[in-house]
Image (cartoon, rainbow, N blue to C red):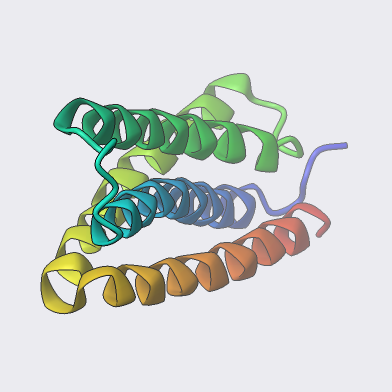
Length: 134
């Protein structure tokens, strides 16, 4: 069933994908910061790097998958793919905010930023669902 509002569906899906992916990445940073705050001796540089790289990869995959799946109502596969790619780019931009939150307020700032990203993701998913059903 094609949507009657493909532009609204695509834009809301980009927002949903970008915020979902950034939330996954920010969750990885928060997990690392909490481990470091507890001074766990097993948290080496290698472990921290693996955690950050894994959360970055998972965030990008989540962004592309969300952008792709939220645009099911759009029949053109190419447009769906572009939506996923733009979602991944948006994820990287939003994930940069995690650095600012960490520098300004430490783990508490990262947790607040994560909560904001999750709230924005829920709102964007709802908007994408509404736009696709028009």
